[in-house]
Length: 354
Image: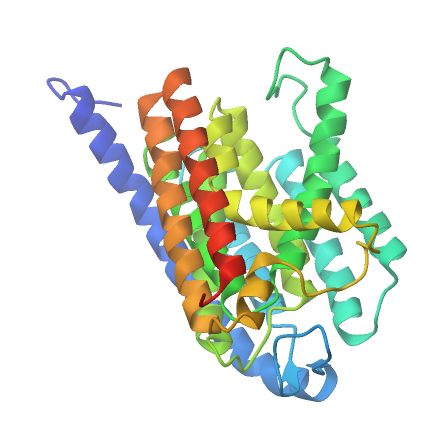
């Protein structure tokens, strides 16, 4: 409650500081826990989860995969520890968060099995659909992104979009530091929005924990990587990012929710469309994503991920600006600018060093 004589600006600042005192330690603990878990698990992963290089991969030496188990476990452990301690108002768990946690664990188990023993594409897709259905089913009925659409059509589109988002996060995790360069700016922006109460405290906490866990994983994945994220990480991370972006869109910031992951959306969706148009078996592994074409054209992995990170920082800035402006015109303008930047960036990647 504001004190007598305090201004709205002072109250907002005090609330932001109070939230920071929860979110910053959560991110730090997730970082340290992720580092520790990776140090413990890496010898086992070297023995049981080696990714062998092939014609479609971007690495040349056998490299352990499965580092995502530390990222996901650290994220969930820190979030649930804070929830159990009730360190901040608005944090007690509910059915939605319980369903999300169960779905994340389910996808992590599926990903671990696929990292060690190949799982068929149909089984993977069925499991992903089941996970998304479980989360969508417990969303509040009043949650609407496009109220002009019938409720059931919107829910069907949400289901399809979320399944696609999980897959595209998995598809895009193809070179060292790529997922770090994507997840860190998105979660960082969500933490900033959480500090000012734009998203729910629980979502801000989840973003902070995932941010810290990814930073803990980053040193092991820096080019040339000593450890890959693996499907055990990319699949549940796709689900978690989708939940965070849905939370943002549900608060009336659909433009920001589209802008934040726009690079991944643009690269993966454009590539899929091209493969379908060319009658290629789009469900099979390939090397035609724009970032893969950039490596084939001579651009180094550090150069690519640095550019992706800078692009994502620019997109995060645009997304934050649309939230601050709270204007339909500003949102449309920001979407147009973001789309133009993303299109230019994809073209630049395809050209490589030329």
